[in-house]
Length: 150
Image (cartoon, rainbow, N blue to C red; front, side, top):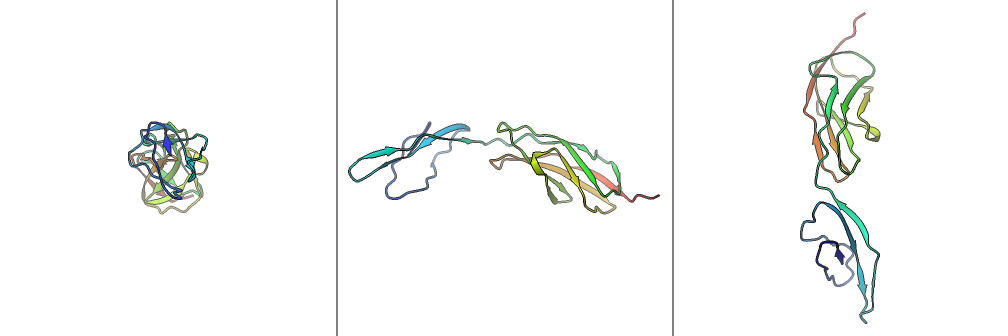
């Protein structure tokens, strides 16, 4: 087995999995496998590519509700933030409200929450994770829910 920037490795037997002993640098890499029989007849696979991503996306910037905002009781709460940047271009968001996680569909930068929230102060933040599992959290903010009175 060999990969770009690495020393070829000889593996004996029917090995189907290998983890390099040295850390690979961040960025694009290629690898291939060469199989040889007892008569030293060898065949190589084509080169396959993969990417090493060690950097977390930038932290989201919270927009609404704003710090200290009083939000009136509503059947639909809207949480918005400025999206994160990630070199791999895909970020999945999770909104955490009082340590309760709410997944955000489709890598969007808004959560429409149809849930009952108690009439108290709440803390929220957004976690942004890329496909490699690198995550960054926004700073948390506090908002308060008040009952709607006619």
